[in-house]
Image 1 (cartoon, chains in turn purple, cyan):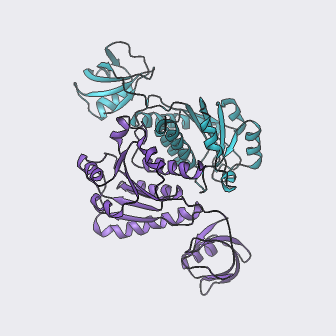
Image 2: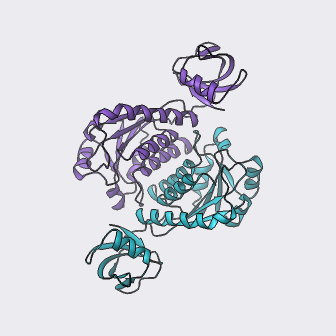
Image 3: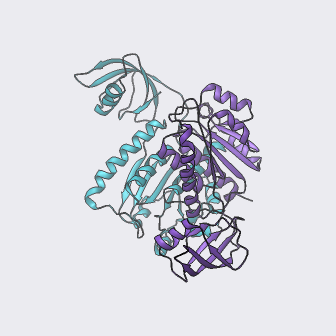
Length: 249
Length: 249
């Protein structure tokens, strides 16, 4: 069954959906009728089964009868941020979709020295609106309770303003040097939140890695194979899910 | 430094590259000159540093001086097969590229009841040639020693002919029912080889899952979020890398 987000808190057994985008998609595009059921997630991350009761095509709203569901959350038990260097449009969009499916709470794009792409000031807002929309759709499709926040930092040094409890930088040179245990060590400490930073296709400049290391970001290897820039964050998020969702004692 | 595969065994300190495709790419496209260095992997999976000595543009061959490298392998310590239901062309290509980056030894596509795509008999060979080329390029880029084999099965039941030591089926219903430990249990047995089967976007038909279960494929959940068909194999391969390459005692 499809799931949609509503911006309000649902606190009665009837709820009127006034969001035009939801109306358009659910009623006009998917042609749902009175009696059809959908899932709704409200602003408190609660999940409801909703049965369509009335459709007002003039007002572009519809009324649903709701029933709270007790189903377990689909959110990772810790707040995870992936911070990725800018890359081409399709890769940035792809990272946003996949990182959402894989449970990231926040997706950060930042400019760096060897990035093959830079965003001009006047396009940032438009790009973020588009990426936020991709994140919302992916969150609905993967039945998440939270839409990840997508943000942009125009310099790498701004990463220190969004630090988590544990901060990592995926560093290819670490992997090449045979570093194979720091990621597991960091995860074994069960941090409340974690941030991992990923460089562009050409890698970080040495002074960028120095800056991150000096500011408490631990360089970790993600295995012996060279991954493309967009593959590494997926690897990281998959590992977090396995570690914290599938190997709990 | 770039890496290329050669089909021969390199057993002397000079080697003549006669593969037209390698010549075309290395000499014509990338314009490498005498004195330039590249990595070569031969048919025994050995890695060599190769220095270009002579270029014969009439014959379209070039001679390199080689030096064997002792660098550790980039291959997963167990043979991993991912078997994915057919999906759209770009997704099939994408799975092939990413599964190669993430270390799969064999990538299988198969037809299934709810698959949104079917391959006609007369296109199979052409499609496999294209996918094998994608796998080779991704293997070179990720510095692997092995090019994964890409194969096609025109029915799901043929999967029993390619079974590994441990055989799994990623099953969404398992995840929904809160199954969270069977994957970890299977991996803890350190199998010599492992195969995981992934359904199409619409999932497996119940009788397909029954068939797989009856034939020794264990249904496992891959966490609480619904992943797209192309994301699940990436999750699985990332987890295998973490388990067998980054958490070794």
